[in-house]
Length: 123
Length: 123
DNA sequence: TCTCCTAGTTTCTACTGGAAACTTTCTATC
DNA sequence: GATAGAAAGTTTCCAGTAGAAACTAGGAGA
Image 1: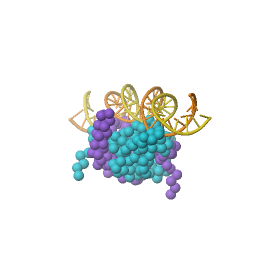
Image 2: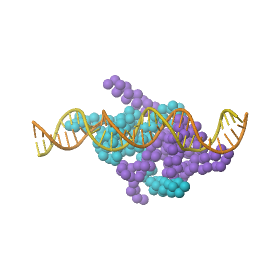
Image 3: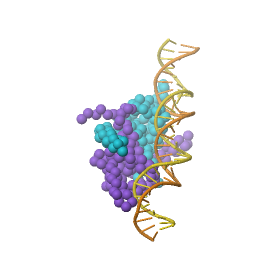
Image 4: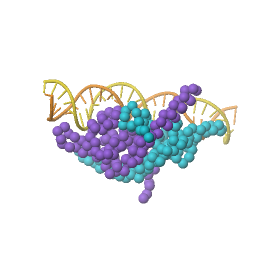
């Protein structure tokens, strides 16, 4: 198994992937899809604060990268379902680890921010 | 163990943390610091393509969040060393998993992009 | 007929990223 | 003595992107 790729290199294509993953909304979408397929407006409602534009842009990018699939059902008002691909599935463990690290360590981060702000404010 | 925090909620402070971690440069910096303290210009040289402005901004934010520490040595031209804090250390496993997922799965992503572009280009 | 549902696109503004130049303090070199 | 270089940034400018809100389209239901 050769590892010709190196995230520290500029021109390296892994930078493009890292750019995609290093996106708050992309992480939340991937994490939300972990439990099964979800429709557009359902995602929109679940992921509080995301706009329709950014949701559709992000979904399109994730689909292009082969991380999620888009299935259209010709129902009455057309239904579109998004789901993780096998490739996307290999990512969710890492992604949810990141999201839940934030939940677990929130208190420590808030405390650090408070003491940092107190120190620089007193300057 | 209470989990009052939820990344899917808008106003939730975890969103702030997720915003910080969902940053290409922050991830690369944390990953680069995993092996020990590094100086400013050393980081700048190692992480190809980062600008001085963004490097200093990102370091400042990570320091504020308590993930890295900044130590100034009053040497001839002043030397500044950045290192992971214990809190930051708890993140590196996850962060490097993300960075190296990109390296491992690059080929699959590039293939997916190519077939996606071929399909939509033929439309 | 009026309104809501689906899944988006469009428009506008405000913020942020990246490139390049400038700052400051000291050492070493010509 | 003047010049250049290295450390760690800050400042300036421009372009691209995020977010908010309105608009599209084609039915279903009151």
